[in-house]
Length: 282
Image (cartoon, rainbow, N blue to C red; front, side):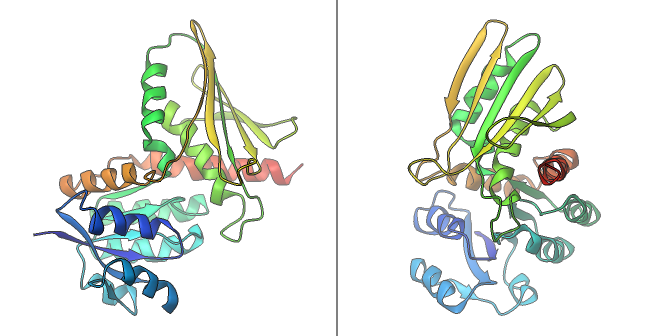
């Protein structure tokens, strides 16, 4: 019997990707999107055109009676707290699309709700689980001594979906996936593009935020230097860039275990709050 998954928040193209990978391509035959909630009528019709069996639910409560797990996917992270907590309180495992929330306090509330309910929770940028990210992480694991890491990514500081965090969170999560969630000595860099520096263990980290490239699409990557190592790698997001996310969701649902710790889930929002404060102050 398939695990029935509900989609809450349908304005992102990620909703199309989840339905494509799970329902149309059958990448994980034991998982299926079965219900939708939280979208305009025209948008729900678009998604139903991908799978005529999808059920539209008027409320989160109605959806919870029809599914075993939930993906919360609103573009605006400010909408994630209420939906995620309602699902967790109903003992439904939840994946929250990036960002987990727009504030640290909301992120903590979601993670605490999962802990109280004893239910698995996952959230993250797709950049965390790309094949190139895994290769870079494995290479870093073999480096001894101090290193320098520069991660760059696209941002839209005046996004309608919570401001800078909507895109900047990708770069923050990329660095934390490679190095871990710890950070200290956060400061603003005096460069052309908005940039932030911090320390993570022996690594000096720089995050730079850039407008969209010539292609108009988001661009991300890392540059690393240290003892016996120096390389620069773009991380290109292809048509199936959400498939690694689907794979992580599948593992969580099968095991019932949250694959990220409380600290790992909250750290991107904690760092993002410091970044926001520094960028607003200059």
